[in-house]
Each structure stands twice: as C-alpha cells, then as structure tokens.
Length: 193
Ligand code: 5GP
Image (tube, rainbow, N blue to C red):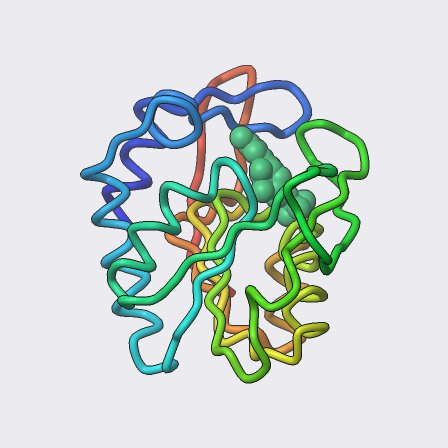
C-alpha cells in the first residue's frame, strides 16, 4: 500500500535489533485518516470471507482493528496481556514479545469467540509470528475459523509471514519490508512471495 510505505519512509525510525519505530503515526500518536485507508484496503482483501469477528492484541492493534470491525459491521475482541482481576474464565496463550524480549501471557474471556465464528486477525507488525500464532491457538481452541490475517507492517526478512502462509493462512500485509539499514536509515519494500 503506497500510502503506508510513504509514511514509513518519511516517519519511521530504525532502532537497534531490527525494530522499526512508528510511534508518530501508528503506535503512539495515531493518524486516523491513514488507519481508515488501511481498514478499507483490508476490507477489500477479505470482503468475500464472511468475516463476523475481528481479533487483535492490546494495545497497538486496537485502533486499527476498530476501524476494520466497522467496515465489516462486526464485533472486535482484543486479547489482554498479563493477568487481570476483571477477567472471568479465559482462554490463554503464551506469546514471545519481540519488543519486550520476554514471554507474555495473552487471554480472551471464554465465550467472546464462538464456535464457527469467521475471524480476521489484525496486528500492527509481523516479525517471527509469535503474536499471530498465540491468537490462532486461542481461536482454534474456541473452535472458530481463522479466515485471514491482516498485518500493517510485515518484516519480510523475518520468518513469520513465510511460516503462516506455508500453513495455508491468507496473510495480507499492507507493507512488507525487504530490508532496513539502521546506519543509512534506508528501508526497502517488497511484494508478498
Ligand atoms: P512477532 O510476534 O511476529 O514476532 O512480532 C509481532 C509483534 O511484536 C507485534 O504485535 C508488535 O507489537 C511487535 N513488533 C515486532 N516487530 C516490531 C517492530 O519492528 N516495531 C514495533 N514497534 N513492534 C514490533
């Protein structure tokens, strides 16, 4: 998606450890017009999949996922991180956090994803695939169907996208980074393989 690639080039910052910082328009300060255009792009890619639920992880995924859920006129469920006293019986998965460099427990309350729901997963980044795999395991536990995975920024030089596509999931990333160089600040994009 050219608009997103342009914003990443203009406003993204490459941090050590292959981390891209997009806090100025996606992860901290948010550009709602850009997010709306992204939601429309995902809607066009998944509109024939009969989606009736959008699922993401708190917190960065939520803003994008709300706009996507509005397009599909369906509910959004976001997985909570850590333990919370307000949660009842939950379905959980352990996810390795790429940015925090530790395992994090994610939870979704029983019943919020129902058997036979057609789920679209939305997330901001795809690196090694741990976040998506955690969500997939919860969705499968609930006996629902993963109909697609919409990612804002896939880091194509890491293996998550390859692994998920090889398992048959329809992964649609709006920008795929082929390489990024912290010294020169250059970012190269690629198409999905
Ligand atoms: P994965 O689980 O695929 O290894 O990593 C995806 C998750 O880690 C995303 O939910 C995102 O929060 C975080 N993440 C991975 N890579 C980056 C990155 O380069 N920049 C930022 N801001 N978050 C990232």
